[in-house]
Length: 393
Image (cartoon, rainbow, N blue to C red; front, side):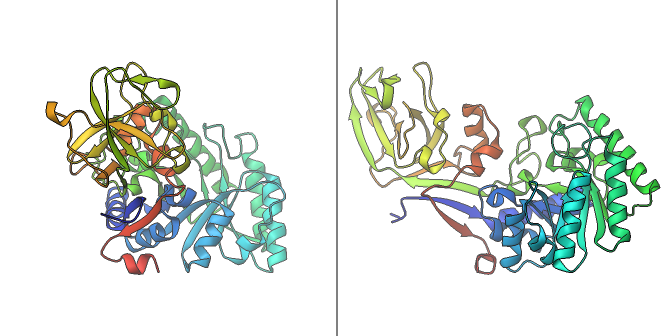
């Protein structure tokens, strides 16, 4: 029995294999592995090292502090970062030779100021909004943003390295927004290049587009969720269908096993009542550890499934801050024989029949991205893989 109460096991070999596979599918476009949000809950630095080994020539980090942490961990390759706020000091990013992103004339000016403070030109990419209506320059503003960047480059304050945008509906291959956004992006490329801009990379494709939309790949693809072995959307196929292997397993041990009689109710609010004599197991994880409370069961159905001794068993009642209850059933009538200390797998690759992160997402009504990204709290993270010592040093 492990002395660890609960752990997140991350298979770095799976991440390496996923990145290699994605690079082979998307080639000749270059590969960016997106490691924001602590590597989607998998651990940013070990994931980045595995991805680099697999051929990721770029890393993506949303926030400046994430990108700087990669530099502090020894990464010397190209890193793009894109989410800043007015007044944020970009000087450390320039000094660290990061590729910064500007959405507006004002942000270009902010990057120029950081370059002057750093005493060296900044690497700069421009983002255009092609239809997501989130970050990026509008079509109306795009020519002015390009002009501001070219002026900064002429002053030797920036080096214009790329331009990019982000798709809204790539996980729905037949959605008309995909073609519309590609058309706007092609227009934005023409506007910039006719103004004199020359880019190292032009990029639009996320994981879904990298896998199924060759027309969106351009010079570089940005793969996030697929690098971690999850399908961007079940409509595109399962992870296995797409040649991917989930890298995260969340596991713990039963803290307690006890019988309850028919008519007894379970957990806060008594939202589930045993319809027959049964056996319950106590799992020592809760929403304080990232387990979604919406995975609780209601009076008319089971909650999320977990894996105990070769069987899927359902959450019963509400998930609490530190613990939740599963129904093992009466072993004398087809239930699962279990005792305290037996392993519980919340989700994993599915090799043994255990639930997947997508199974949990389906119960909760969310996406696999959220399930893996939120796993943290008091769980310990453990890495496995052939080169784990190198990746976690």
